[in-house]
Length: 503
Image (tube, rainbow, N blue to C red; front, top):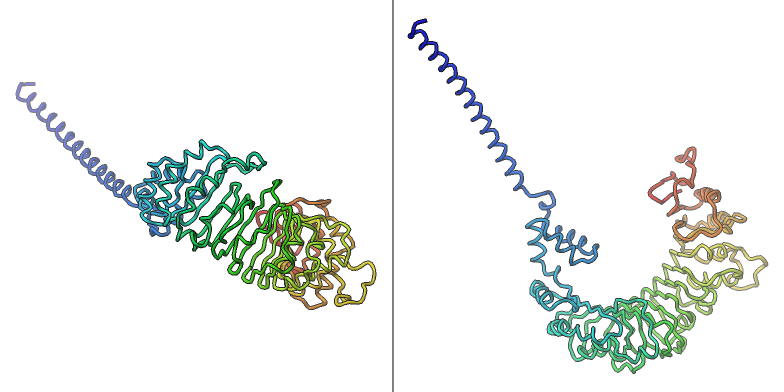
């Protein structure tokens, strides 16, 4: 091959290589274009708000608030949520409500930050300290002084020792208690917006002048968890709507009547707990014209309290760990005629209860609609009299619960084997049906203590379904064999949900 021919071959090879390189370049450019388009699409997608951020701010606030207050400590949770995204951070930082709870024991810089971010909204003040520790009490002064400067913004006040096991003895009462230390500093202040006060430390209300009408005219809710009275109460508190008094247990102090503490005209809910050593109010001497709800827990002399109060509009009554109902309600036949919801739980055992006592209990609440009792209590209410009853206004009553002519629902905590003896419930329900009364909703909660009950006996309850709406809550579906044809017998069907069986 001559030189010219060789040059032409080399040129042809180079031109072929050029074409391949151009095609590869075009492919690379196309790949670059596609990759840029993908990056642009991903960038636009990442800037798009998440689904929750499409929510209106008002709904997002509700969600964040629920989350914050279901975690402990809430402050740490609030910081975690604020770090999720810019919008959540802005919502939390710019919402005064999230900064309205002031912990006086916090650092002063933190308290000032909260006051600044709360922007004038009403404040919830929390004061927590050891029950009898003067040095720790002094440590509260800086934060308390800052909070006191905003007394006109206080909406609620919680004072607690953080030690629920604390019990007073003569030596400790002589020491400077936390509430006395705080009262000395705030008794002279005016709290125009204060609506709720909860004191969980031992307190003598005679020393709490800041609760008076002159100091806290808007106060509606008062809760004193370790209540006692040594000093006289010079001025009653404002027109409370709810009052919860827990008397100091095992105290050496003899309690005088405490009703000079409040004006009873507007009170709609009253809760009393603890064992007092004396209750000297005269029968029918305490009038609560607006009281709708009464709760008594571990009150030793329940009868004396019930004899003393007059509650014409009471709708709900709850008694727990109190005296036997037959003793408690003796002489109260016409006092609770308007009660619609009644609860007697963990009270004195009713063993040996006479028919006349059960009648006395039922006739005290003639208009009741819903009743809650413990497993140990209910058998005696189904008992017919063993001997003919003496002539009287209730001599025609066969079962004590026949007096509850407006009864709509019964709830029993636990089971009792005696209830199955002699078909007590079935006989009563059949008798009730002959009286043409409305069908009863009967609920048994099995999550409570079950006395002398066994799985085989539970199936007997299915026999009741033709005469009541039976709900068994807290039992496993393994306790109940499925009916062969649940749709054709009795009350509709056999429904099983989580730990709840409807028959």
